[in-house]
Image (cartoon, rainbow, N blue to C red; front, side, top):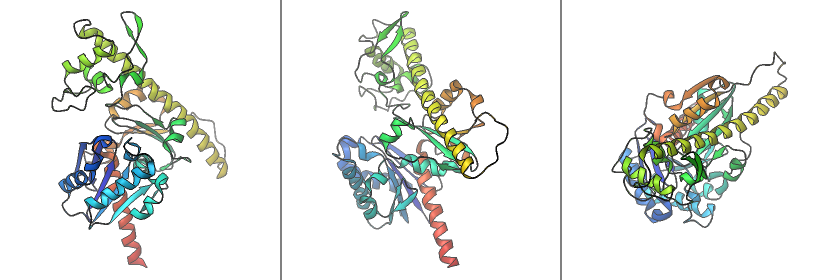
Length: 366
């Protein structure tokens, strides 16, 4: 059975099948939403001409072209139906199950931003026993998800609730405006306020320090100019209200390093909050199951890293202290397939594939 999994975001469209054949394209939902059905069909068919099933999750409903999340959810689902009119479609709910399109439209708050839940449900298989934390850093946001015995331990699942609990951190490896990471940076031995403008993003910071490669074909930048070192330096200079005639590359390198340090601190702070929450959950679970008390040991969950910014998240974990974790794993190591850039799309395809196999087994047995 050939299944396509879609992760439909506000800035990128990602698709994968259960075997790891995948595609990812930038897609500015707030500007291009009318083109969504044709774009979904295009990238889906580039992976598989005739899928037997399409499974999907989304965050695109929050794009500001939709007045409400419910309208966004329905638009995305109807776009999938237009793109694949003869194919069964299933939508992932953050209750941990798939729903048919019409049912999903009636349950918008269970559909909205359920991508983290799908990824955590699949990734949790890497740590089937005990506590763990999934840190998924993408281009725009970072999820810090507590898991226990391989399952997400989250009781309120909306983005707002997760922001309040530090399980959703609105900072990413590429699209995040640098002025949202820090209000000021060290410059010429003093704190210098940054312009509160979208002059540069964290992609520029990582390129300047050598952690991101140049890509002259990429114009998904703050000013629409290519993702090259020279252009990134110029964008970063604008954050200081100047241009490259007024600052040196070495000074801008230090500015970029300071911004990266601030972003790591954001992630570390979220991890610390989630670890405390997870520790309480583990204690409550032990009490509920009547587990006998043993010698008090330091709480050390495993950590799973994923997303396009997984290596950046790893640096944050190193800064937090590797000794605080029993094990550090990269989600990419769970499979021989190269699906790092489309991990959630791959996860949704695998979940749908496994559910289909279970259904076939049940039909055979009963």
